[in-house]
Length: 321
Ligand SMILES: NC(=O)c1ccc[n+]([C@@H]2O[C@H](COP(=O)([O-])OP(=O)(O)OC[C@H]3O[C@@H](n4cnc5c(N)ncnc54)[C@H](OP(=O)(O)O)[C@@H]3O)[C@@H](O)[C@H]2O)c1
Image 1 (cartoon, rainbow, N blue to C red):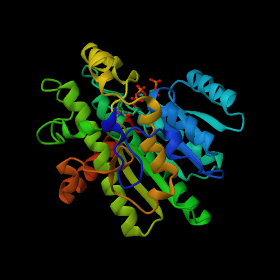
Image 2: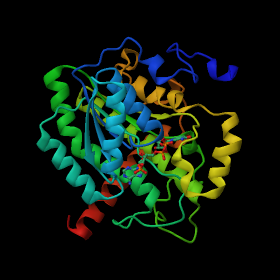
Image 3: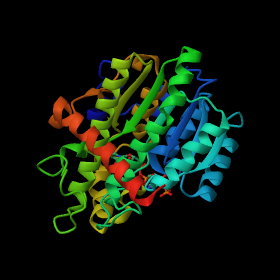
Image 4: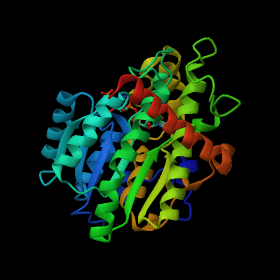
């Protein structure tokens, strides 16, 4: 579709594929963790990073599926370097175990891609008593990122190669509850709206990127943090609601990107030299874009960071993990 081929400042457009935006890049020697690589955008991201030489650590909740996908990628790309590690990002206990095991592996960490996500399920709470979309899409990733930061900082310092944290958000961050984040009503089942709660969790992703980028800049750490909208892609994301399956299956197909295009902005941010030194931005279609107004409000951004810290601390304390 012509509208998808409009090129932005990077020289790439909505129709650029992950393979195209990384063509010619040799990323041997870099190690990346990606969450949610068993399906959709994450799977294609893992495939392309492996193709470019990145040692990919696939963080998966279903290790059987993870090993199957690893084998499929290796069948296609025999030189691919891939590990599979277990992670249920909706569980702080699982996140702690993953971080501990990753650190024990002694691997460096150049790139962290927070991609795993779920959309619009009926109301439920995670095992840590946090509304499930916020728990999966943001809180687990928030806690994991904090746990891996020391390793990323050491890697960046020793290698001199800038670290990159890439957080997959969504344009639906702009379609959240009117107060943006419902600080006092996160677990309020009565007023829960599955789609607005998804938007809230995706706004959380962009707020996370913004504040972490600010903190790392202030500390003088050589790691960038950016969030992105991958486009609208028919993946398994719509599996939780019949309405969304219809929208994804029929309506959205008219405007859709395929997964090869959907993974491009993530791959650009992960390894393209054009993203070097750019931090705290929200991207779409391989170019810098405009996030929700909440992301441009420093007080709101900081308030949400503190809220996330408290939520994690409270959950860890109550389950004494
Ligand atoms: N598709 C779109 O149009 C679209 C638009 C905007 C943003 N996004 C974002 O893009 C990201 C990827 O979505 P997708 O479209 O590729 O969806 P998808 O095909 O459903 O893939 C989601 C991935 O996340 C994993 N996952 C879900 N919950 C998890 C958990 N608790 N612990 C560990 N892994 C978990 C899934 O693992 P299993 O295979 O085990 O379920 C799967 O690998 C999400 O963050 C989504 O919000 C997508």
